[in-house]
Image 1 (cartoon, helix red, strand yellow):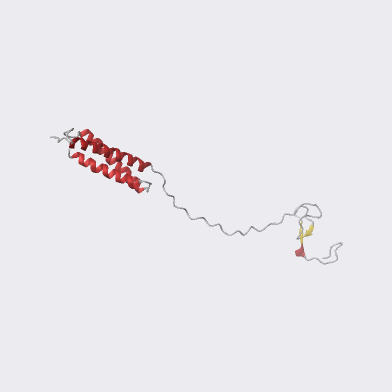
Image 2 (cartoon, helix red, strand yellow):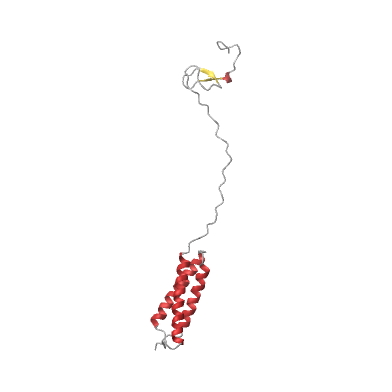
Length: 151
């Protein structure tokens, strides 16, 4: 096929139709010479390398709520129990009241439960809290030997 004003023969693959005015234009054209509209060439999708997901970073538990509660409760319980034992040993008291033994039991075992939960959750200072809770339980058990026998 020979075009007007052209001295070379163009093959059919070098020609395409304008999507707007349907006139024949060159395949490489970026604008139609008949209607003047821009011809949008379909760009192949970019060939990006696949994005790899970063490995999850293990999160260290930085909270100290349970540990701190267990530590404070264990220290207070142990101090009350040691104070009572000191008063019984120097003769100020003859025995430790059942209500105080009950209070020491509640505080020391609550402290122990909180400390174990903190250790399981791997919270900071959980080892110190567990130590204080164990000491509080031992002091509580020592205080029970000086309680009033109930008949």
